[in-house]
Each structure stands twice: as structure tokens, then as C-alpha cells.
View 1 (cartoon, rainbow, N blue to C red):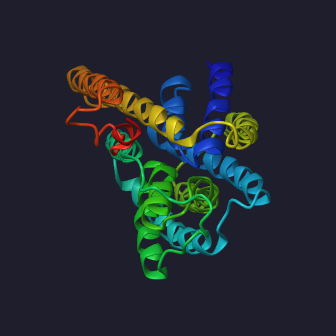
View 2: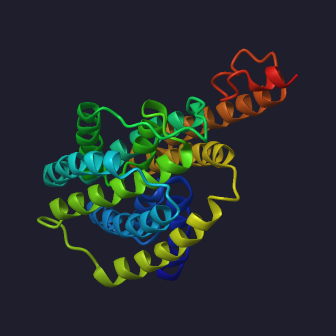
Length: 291
């Protein structure tokens, strides 16, 4: 199981390198259900893995000019404060409750990914979010990071792309800076009450780093919108697994059924122009324009 954990950790890095998020969405279930860690140890270890992997991925994106530092640093500093507080607060919350909260975050962020973002001119100069809004969003996302170990990529990237108008590649690169800052702050909060298996954490982190380097290189050759949608459905499926484990088979099965129906509807709407749910399928009228 340890070898399987380390092998799958490469996918964590690829996700972070490609999408600017997704590391914690994969790492927490991986450590909890494959490596056999308890919930709080899995969350704390995830913060280490995701933080280190994000930092390395951010370097690759920065060299390619895909990081907007001003927005990233403001968001990151606010996120660190929220994450440290969340890590301290987590000691008073049962592990099962944290994992259920994690599943809820997975669902919310997956829906945001599937709905997509407003069209941004790739050649336009990146805009800057207002400082007040950046700080407020950073605190909220940071608190979530500290509590449930979610690095916040699927919260940060939509904020940067949807609200800030950043092109997707720059939103991804900037989010990695934010995720690294918040993850290390959240880890600091957890270390006051949780012990980490540093040998296993180091092995998983090293594997994820390899994946992050691969993912950063693949960014230029893979369509980010298609990848975002595919990963959104995957995240929804993973949330049903966690709910099955932590709440009960009935809830997990019901969630999986809803995800399956929604995925089938999305596929149908992608093929037929008159589908009434085309907007929810992420088409936003593009197919109709093409025809």
C-alpha cells in the first residue's frame, strides 16, 4: 500500500502542475484510505505535500511568466492567516466531521469548475483584483485550507479567473504561489497537535514533485478547459466515495447516482444544441454559435 500511495502521489503533482489545484482533493483520500492514516494526520500530511509541490510548480510557471505576483502575494498572506487559524481550530473538531466538510468542499469546487469561467482574451493584460476583495477571499479560503487540508486551488483559480479576469494559465500559476503559502501556514497550525510520519510524507512529496514538473510542461499542450471539466467530474465522483466511508453507503450511493445522471445530462447537452441545460453543461451557447 505504501508503494501504491507513492505511485499515485505522482498524479497529485500532475494535477497541481496542470490545473493549479486538485492536490489536496487527491492527497487527503489517498493518505486516509490507501495509506491508512487517521483523518487529521492525513490532512496535516496533505498540507506538507501540497505546499511543497505547489512551491516547485510555481517556480516553473514563474519562469514562463505565468504568475501575477502582486495579486498572489496579497491573497497568499491573507490566506496564511486564515489557514493558521483553521489549523489551530481543527483540533477541536472530530476527524470524521472534517472529512465530511472536505467532501462538501469537493462538491462545491467541482461545480464551479464545471460551470466554467467567463471568456478572457488570452492576449489581454492580466487585471488585478481589488486589494480588499483579495484579502477577504484569502482569509476565507485560508480558513478552509487550515480546517480540511484543501489547498484551495479550486477556490483560488476560479476567483482569479472569474473575478479577476486572469487568463487561465496565469490564474493557474498564481494560484500555486497562494496554495504554497497557505498550505505551510495550515501545516504550522496542525503541528501543534498532530504527529506526521515524516518518512512517508517525504516519499509522497518527492513523487508529487515529479508529477508537478510533468504537469507544468503539459500545460502548453493540453486544452485547459477540457481538462478542467474532466477533472471536475472526477472530483464529484471522489466526493461520493468519502461520503460513503464517513456518512454511510446510502448517502454515498445517492451522491454517486446524482453525479452519474448529471454527467450523462452533460454529455447529452454537449451533443444536442437544443438541450435546456446547455448552460449547466458548460457550453454557454458556443455550439449554437458554431452551427
